[in-house]
Image 1 (cartoon, rainbow, N blue to C red):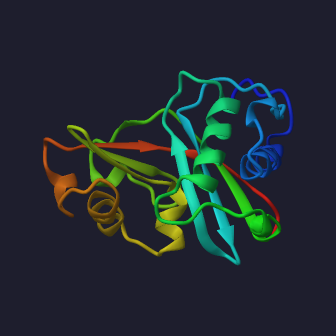
Image 2: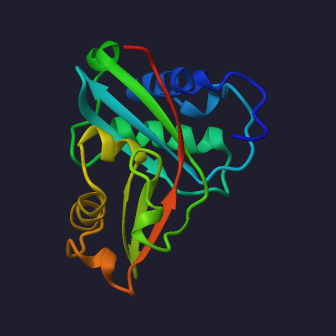
Length: 182
């Protein structure tokens, strides 16, 4: 992202230090961030244990610093993902951490604009919303319509075809993804 002044591959290491402190009940705000970064559209932290999803949470708050967004996402992914129990200290060594730094989203004009593996999607209708990171499409081998439909039904709590409705906003974004080595 523009304005970064240090090595961005250290974002997963930062997230790991935050998670270690959070799991131990310590203050995560004292972990020094790796870099000062410019504008972003939010951040997500994905945790995998033995290549299986163990948590994924994020924020779409471009107003906060990237370090705060990553810290908040890391704590949420480890302790507050409703699909999983909180990460225990004994699991830390088995976790692989991935940090996705999102661009600002923009409206999708038509289906042809969506590039699988390059674009993530944010679906919104009134107070319902759902998001899939760009890597979801390729990891699950989804075509464009299935990618949009599953985001509607699985993430936004909308009918699968809601993305076709004029009352539903479909936004695209890109993500810079930084992952720990396996």
